[in-house]
Image 1: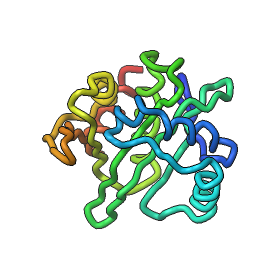
Image 2 (image 1 turned 180 degrees about the vertical axis):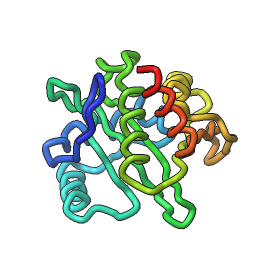
Image 3 (image 1 turned 120 degrees about the vertical axis):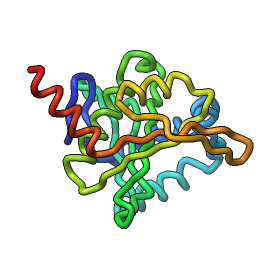
Length: 179
């Protein structure tokens, strides 16, 4: 679907379910996302997963993050899409630790931002990340998201970040004129 230097974003498939299930059960990944690991059986998860693939939500668009050699290493999503406010929220997980700290997350976020601004009419992308997740902050800043506030929820403190279409367009013009 969308290629970049390290990854391709593609539609989710039923064959992704085992990785996704394992990542959703992982305590460290859950901690980085301020959630708790899932406890349902694989069979229950599979049934819900298949249902979501069959009947996707109109306010959510999920992608698998895949290396160019076909390895499914994570997922990214935009969700809570609000057409009235012309905005959406971005999320990402690189579940395969072999690909941490090597630029795959940055590449995936950048590709997703490009996809959103090229394929939708949305004007703002925002996200929240734990204030303690410095690796995520670096990734998002490399993708030109700017801090825009803080949020406390359920005992966690989050950094809020955003990028607007106009900022992204300026960066695209700068990049193309530099070539």
